[in-house]
Length: 236
Length: 248
Image (cartoon, rainbow over all chains, first blue to last red; front, side):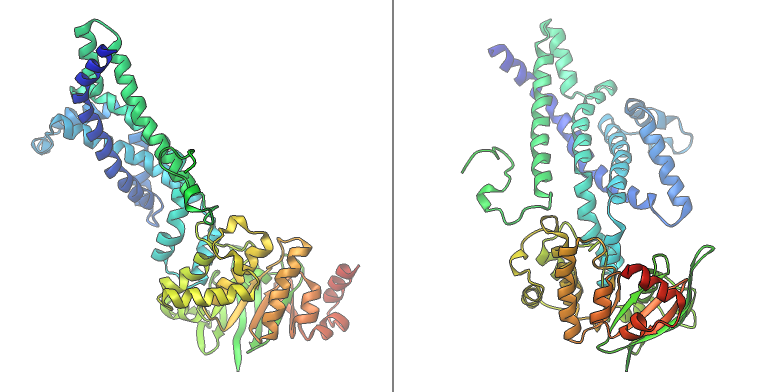
């Protein structure tokens, strides 16, 4: 058991990159994916096609390949290549954000399609303009529908961060591999697995809480019975 | 003074002609029922009045504000102002599922800065009382029955203080018992002299409550008159056939 905690301590350094990649990707790719959704539904045909092509390329090719492309591939472009040299972390972040934005575009688009056209009509006859209708009426419903898929995507992201070890970033998986080689034991892999599982447990609980909160069914429930982020099942 | 004047309204979806020169007017305080067989263009006509569908030609003037003049729409802002004189109630209620009943009622007046929060809530409570749903203010639409949803929708439309209410088959997705509770609210509104245009299949309501009936068939209004004129002495054979088939 002490060995377990020693190893866990060894691996904590790796968690830094895992978390940086996770949070930066989430924070940037969601709004970008949202903009892509709007572009995907644009009235201008060229924008629609360009967005669809972008999504096709980013979803259709391996993230691993994209990591290599942004780190090494860009440097082969003549003339502008000197502006495209990135350090490993930046390249990884660019690849992750652009890749996940494409997925989020698909997810938000699904949510948008699920909103009943009658909602737009009801808002219009009440005098709400297009922007207000979108922000106040459509978006909350869209997010509600998209939540389970967003949750899936976030969990996948936690595990995908392990890919950056391929371009030499020293994240959790890298440390686990090195420790396993040094100790000649599988224990570091087990420890790494526990780390990933813990992070995803937090995410699962967070999304379960959000889904409950946005279920639009109960409001008259007394405060102590409302869903809680952790330990929701305990009686207060 | 006429509340709404419609002249020679024409509309088609592609090659499919749905309105072929519809003209009528509604006076202030009148309840007008629009009846007729399915597919005769009743709902499309109603949706044209509030700019949810665009007609190809004709004229629509709401009180003194034109929406469509000889086939030309006024600019977006004026169109919105003209349409704001009307409220609309849909067959499928179209309540906002993510807002409580109170939220549904106060959302638009607050967003458009028509009222302060306390004014809006006070007015909402009055209207909920009027439609008999005072105790449902904090519920979400998913917790309500169809009849309750439709009564909330009526209250929501009234929040904007419209001069006129349009009803697009308001009871067509309700069972007879729930239909009755919605019709009771509409009957009350008619008694209060709210101007209303009601597209409906509820012949009993049309006959008892409406001041005037428009009978639509084959993309046109083929009969216009008091319920007595239409139900007892229909001029057109198509009206007679329709009424006979319903009363059977």
